[in-house]
Image 1: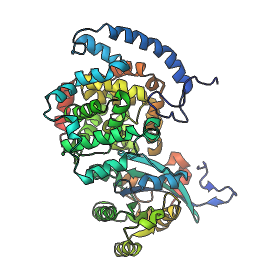
Image 2: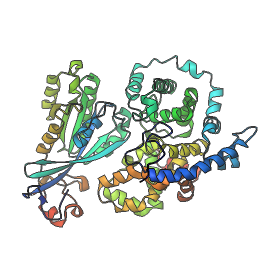
Image 3: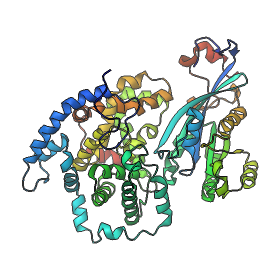
Image 4: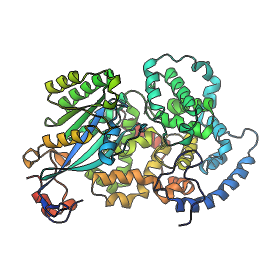
Amino acid sequence: MEKSKYSNVDEYGFERASNFNFEMHDKFMSQYIRTLTRRSQRWSTLTGNKYKKSNTLKRFVRKGIPVDHRLSCWMSVSGALELKNKSKVSYFDLKKKLTNRHVLESIEIDLPRTFPDNIFFTNHEYLPSHLYNVLAAFAHQNTDVGYCQGLNYIAGLLLLATKDEEGSFWLLKCLIDKILPQYYIITMSGLLTDLDVLDELIRVMEPAISRHIHKVGMPWAMGITKWFVCIYSEVLPTETVLRIWDCLFYEGSKILFRVAITLIRLHKQQILETNELGDLIACFRNMKNHDHVIDCHQFMKDVFSMSGNLSNSKIDKLRLKYQK
Amino acid sequence: MSTRSGQAQRPNGSTQGKICQFKLVLLGESAVGKSSLVLRFVKGQFHEYQESTIGAAFLTQTICLDDTTVKFEIWDTAGQERYHSLAPMYYRGAQAAIVVYDITNQDTFGRAKTWVKELQRQASPTIVIALAGNKQDLANKRMVEFEEAQTYAEENGLLFMETSAKTAMNVNDIFQAIAKKLPKNEQTAGQGSSGQGRRLAENDTGAKAAGNCCK
């Protein structure tokens, strides 16, 4: 095979896995670069209150936010900017009041364990300290959550994507306080609820898969916890995760279910062919290598065509039904 | 690994009687080295900075013990206390558990005791529990005395070893000791698909193998 012109480190500093599908990636990128150029031109036509929510902007966001618009657009459409503007305390003041030794120690332990394969985290002095600041400031102003493992990956990817410590803090706060369910509080009740919600959705939409997963004996928690808790960072290719986050910030947490259902449907055949727990879990772990998952553009099309008619009100009802 | 015949073939051509599969769960405070112990045991590797486990990971490893092939299904769990609510899903039906603490951190020993209590109360009554005092390579920073842990283990009927995932000290040994202690007969079987000494599924070793296994 001809050597790929792409490095074995991606544009966000992540080392590509030894089994990374370069051939597929090259093919995808040769198309995607055209898409990126077209998208960039389109976004440059936005004027005035650029990121005011509208059907046009929603359509644009679903097709991917250009890198140079991401921070401002995420801040605006998610409500993080509003949180920041209304806050009586600035991020810089929050950073000065870090007193809970126990919480700070757990964050310190996890710093070198966050993206140890990412060159921006391992080769640079500043990024781990930014990560520490964001997590520590967050833990001190939201004591119900404090520090929960998984937040390190979210904050870490926010920093890599936005290159802005303060923005990353407000986006993290907005995700935890407003967008995501109560995944990170001490009981993780929101996570337990969402695992049950997904169980019901799959039971109704894909009964054969549901029966098979129960028969093989994989608790949903085993396959899905990391998907939800890390909102797919450390699970799917970086570009695909950021495209999911574009929609998450705009449309809310139902996108997590749409992605989960799409991943499961894309792998229906493989799932049904597994007989043993180990193979089933491996199948879930390898979903990041599917052609349609590497091709983030195709994947997002799949997400909106394959996950059925999933409204916020339907998810709300199910969450109420399985409330812990 | 397995053959389609009733008995597994050894490389030298001799046959081997039993194949037993056990579910083993790793529990313990965050960053004591649970994933590192598994990585050492399964792949012979060690990473200074092992990524934190979110939820749980799953690996398998097979060892030979006399005339028995023991296949471990290893469930490696997240250590942070709040992930506790997920733990029962993982230790349900487990025949063995390794409860890990860090010998340089007294708090993690306290947390290990809590896990032992919970397993004794909630898990299968016949579960084999091993206590692993990990990071033995850092013995110069020791905060938990060997004797203290050993006495505790004896009082509670636990296997006990100090281990080092970094140097590989006692890593295979602790799994080997667990395998020895596990009942390798069908009499104790039960509890559904994850019950005691589960025979390999028929489609894995062939129908005849299932008949020969674990008798």
